[in-house]
Image 1 (cartoon, rainbow, N blue to C red):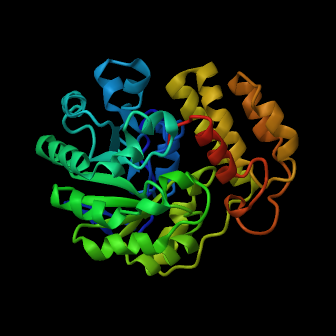
Image 2: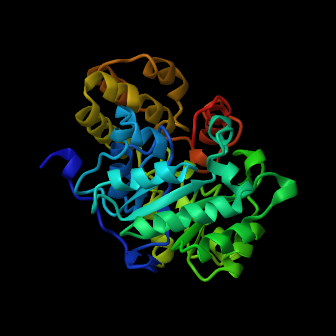
Length: 366
């Protein structure tokens, strides 16, 4: 059995999130993240109890054109289930063709992206731009629902900008069109990933529809997840940036909802083991050179908060072989810094949230 087929660890016995006949063991899932949510990343999240993971966002147009890079986003394994696939698009014909290209039984959820704030996406009328066209969005949801054999969900934002917050209306429309669940990121498109998430907007959607509502945004700890669920009354959450370099967040969420003590943060040796396994899976999937290149950004996220990280990171972004990367991982011998989890820190050049905002502004889709 290869590393990519190794089953994940099942550790939960708490409340479930249900989307039609899909029942998750905890009220949390791994959100799709462009440039991040590849198969090795998903498998590492599953190792720590992630019950549902989404592949990277897929352009319906690119998929129909046979784009090789886009087709790679569909790669999965027997251990990578249940699996969600998120489609990006606004043209019914391309979405229809994309659905025909996705093999039956290859995924467990189809999601339509009406949330991506990146300009190169929204200028085509896709992603969050669909919030400005509720009728078209409803039509696209109905199209996907008519062709899908699995649940269909939609990811939205609170609105296009502060003057057009319409998540409640959009939520009602997609529910009426047949969506089986709706995921709400509590920021407007104009906010991008800055500012605060508006939990009140998310709650308003939950109060307006009868389908499951999943909250998204600023979920960097199990405590933040619990606070969001309590204040929004939502059915679950979608973890995105909170899982960067932090796959054990799912184990911690399970502890909260299983009424168990929070598990200890990994020590340095455990962290190194996780990093080495992630690197191995990446190399196994993409080959030595591309696998290492793919892993570089994860090295940065995993090492946030380590006392010697600033010395090692400049070297990490230049290494090209698994041997060199393993040597850097071996050098992570100093203990983790005290204080809150690295993902909760602010202002560092390597703060995952600040890095995400910078990449988004440069045109990196999410």
